[in-house]
Image (cartoon, rainbow, N blue to C red; front, side):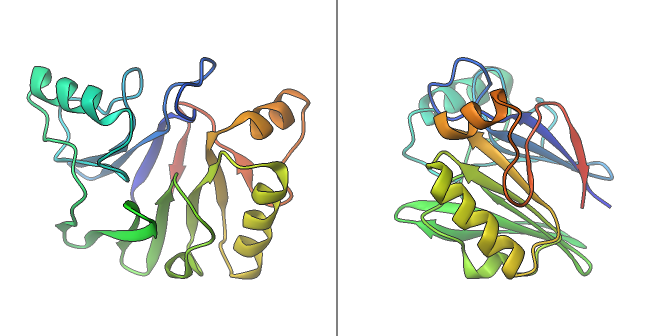
Length: 184
């Protein structure tokens, strides 16, 4: 089964945490998702997949890729059967990723406009927590209602960091932790 390592959990401009990023390892295959300075994937990746080609971190990602010889950050599918990764729309000009191995389904959605229907029933979902407590609560309720088995919030915004600092937990799911490894 794939190992998923959170490289960062912060929102853009966050000083406490590196930008939200994920490394998927499956056998010898390594795929990076998003990230940026301080949370870039290792140089040995096979693909660097991003959710938004126009976000503020993209110039820094391209520079890192050029300097290290990594693949250019892109919005593309990646297949190394039985691992399959597909970009899926989540908001205008933004994508999330659905990755599957056999019958196991994972979702990377650090940018959301609402709960994506294609994430229903996921075994593991990494989701955007930049919104207000109400928005995070709505997303948590939708994930629970739609059968997401494990929900991990990333891209922690002001409301999420305040709750985290106060020892609060989301109504369903958990706060992502940098360097933590998750299994699909």
